[in-house]
Length: 159
Image 1: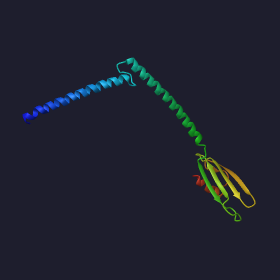
Image 2: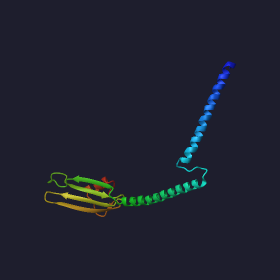
Image 3: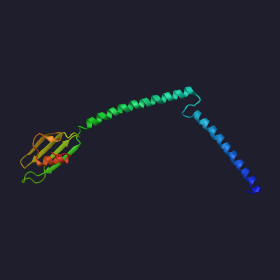
Image 4: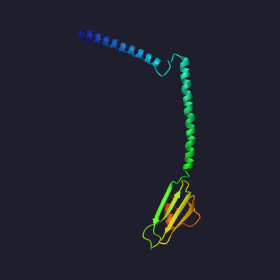
């Protein structure tokens, strides 16, 4: 490098270094001002820091207690929900030749433990009959018609 170029480069480097020093001092001062006026207490005040940490610990304990209560409620709701109707199967059919359409049906309504009922309706020109059969653990203590077995299958279970 030539001597004529060294002096201007050294001067430019000195100016850049000086500007960097000024920016660093300003950033340091600004950081100190915001820490005093910000939401956190100054780190030099041990009593204020301890009070702030105690407040935060109380908030965390309150949130933890609320989460425990919500967990208990979720478990209760889940237990109740197991007994709600969750599986439905429907079969419409025409059991008699003298009727015009599929007005008869077999409807399976079961909970998550495969407990529930099968509701059957036989419709003819003269009358309509309704039957209910109890289902426990996916099984019925009486014989099921083909349509009732199909409704049970459509509900997600087989007879």
